[in-house]
Length: 512
Image 1: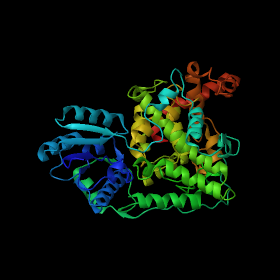
Image 2: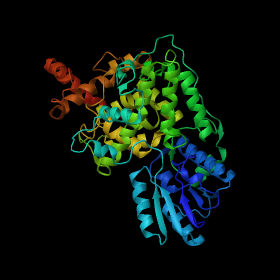
Image 3: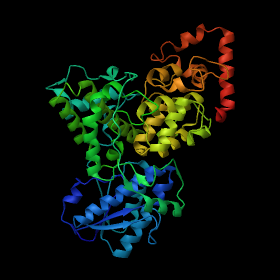
Image 4: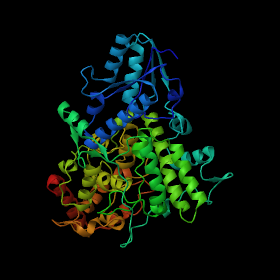
C-alpha cells in the first residue's frame, strides 16, 4: 500500500474489524471529517450529533493508539472546508496524495457525492465494501425481480437457510419459521423490568462546539453526558446486558409500551450496528448461542423475534432502499399534504400516548418500533401528513436514523406511501390497540371509548375518516378486514358526525 494513500472513514463506518485496519500502520492515512453537510442535511437530535462525534473521535484515537496515521478534522477546525468532498479535494492537493479510497456509503446522497468526487479527483480512486451487511446492495432487487411487492418473510427464510441461522439441518428450529404471534403480549400490572444500561461520556466540549457553530438541533441532552455507546467495548457491554437481562422477556413484550419505561426489554443496539461498531452476524450468533445453550431461560420465540429484526427486517429494509432510490423518496400514495403538528417537536399535547412517545424520543433520541409505528407514525398517517415532513422528523429525532433504514420504514411501513410495496396494509388503529398494548390511555385527558366530542380520543374519528376518504385505494385490500363492512353498517347520521368531528380535529390539530 502506497503511503500516499488517503482513506476516508465516515461517521457510520467505525468498524474496527475491517480489513483496512489489519494492514501495516503507516502505509496510509485515515481521514475523519466532522462535516456541516452531515450535521445540516436534516435537523438532528442533539444526542445523535453528540453520539456520532464522540464515537468518531474514540475510533480515531483507537487507530492512533494502534500506530495508524490519522487526520481528524473537527467541526470547528480552521482548516475544515465544510463538505466531505471539499475537504478531500483540499487534502489530496495539499499533501500530494496519489490515491484515494473510501468504503461504500449507506446513503444514496453520499454515494452519489463520493462517486462524483472520485471522477473529479486527479488521482487513482477505489471504492471498498464496508464488510458489514449480510446481503449485497442489489440482492433483494434480484430476489424479487418481476414482483410488484417485496414480501419480507420469503427473503428472511431464504437468508435463514443460506446463513444457517436458527436451523436444524434443513428445517427451521422449533419447526415454525416465525413466532411473531408470540411477540405481542401486554405487560402484567406487576411486571418488573431492568433499569436500562446507559453510558456516561463527557460531552461538554462537543456541546460547546456545536453551539458555537450554530448547528440547528432538536431534542434534549440528559445533562452534559452522552448515554450512548462510544466504542466497540461499550457496544459489546450493551449486547451482553441485553442477552443477560432483557432477552428472556423480549419475545413476550417486544410490542408492549409503558409510561415509566423508555427501554423495557429492548436491546437498543441499532446505533452500535448502524455505526458498524458491532456486526449483525456477531449479534445474531450471540443470541442464537444463548438460546441453544439455555432454551429454558431464553425462549425460541424471543431469540427468533430478535433475530428476525436483524437478519430479516434490517437487511430487507436496506435492500428495498437500494432497489427503489431515489424515486422512493418522492412516493406519496395517498397524496397527503397536511403539516406535521407543532407538538411533534415539543411533546406538548393532551394526548398521553403521543406525549409519552414524543417526550421519550426528545429525551433519549429513542423509541421502540411499536411507539414509532403505532403511535407517532399511525397518527401522522391518519391525519394525512405529507410523508416529506414525517421523513424529516424521523430522520432527525432518532439516534439510529440513517436514511437507508429510516425512509423505508417511514414511507413504506409507517405511512404506506409506497402503496404496498413493503407493507401489506396500512398500519393504523383506534385507541383500542393503544389501550391494549400500553397503560397510556388510563392517564389521558381523552376518553378512549368516545368517537366524537371534546373528550373523544382523536385516534378514533381520524381512523374512520382515513378509511372513508381512501376507500377507492383500500377497499379491495384483503388484509383490511372488518373496516369497510363496519363503516357501511354505521347509521348515516353517526357516520357524518364522525367525519365532521375528524375535520374539526384537523382544523385545530395544534391545540390537541
